[in-house]
Length: 199
Image (cartoon, rainbow, N blue to C red; front, side, top):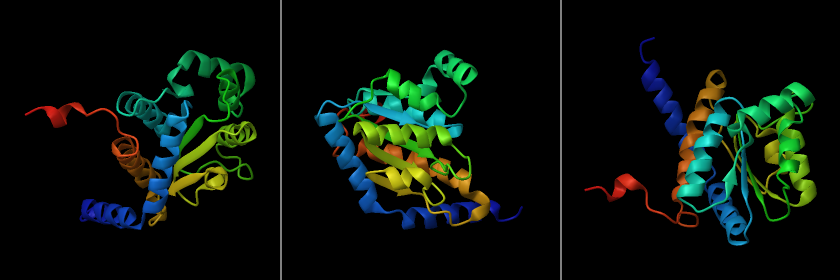
C-alpha cells in the first residue's frame, strides 16, 4: 500500500513522456480537415470510454464547432439494437443509419482498439471496416498495441502500456488528457472555455 500513489503518478508521467506528439498533431490536423469540409464527427467508445465519448461530444461541439455524435448517448436505440441484433453490429448499424459518408470522421476511445481474432470489441472492428469502405477518416486514442483501430486509423495515439497491471486505468485516464488537448489545440479550438475568462 505504501508508495502506491507515488508509483502510479510516476507511471503516468513516464507514459506522458512517451506519447507520440506527432500523432497528436496529425489527429488535430485531420479533425480540422473533417470540420472544414463540412464533415461530421462520430465518437465511439465502450464502457468507461462510452462516458468519455459523451463528454468529448460536448467538448467538440461546444469548443470546436463540430457536428458531433456518439451512439451510446441514445440508450433506447443502443439497447434495442443489442436486444434485437446483438452487440457486435450495434455501432456499424448505427453508423449506417446515420449515413456515414466520405468526409466524415470517426474518433475511437478504447483500451484495446478492437481485436476480431480475440473476440474483443468486435463492434469497433465492424464499425471501422464500414468507415473505411465509405471513405470516412479514422482517428484513435487507444491502449495496449492499438488493436484494429491502430491498423485502420489515419492517425492514432497509443497510450503505452508501461505497467501491464494498470493498462486500463492509465489508458482511460490519459484518454481524457488527450481529448482535452485536442479540443484546445489551435487547429481545432474556436470558442473560449468559461473559467479562463472569469477573473
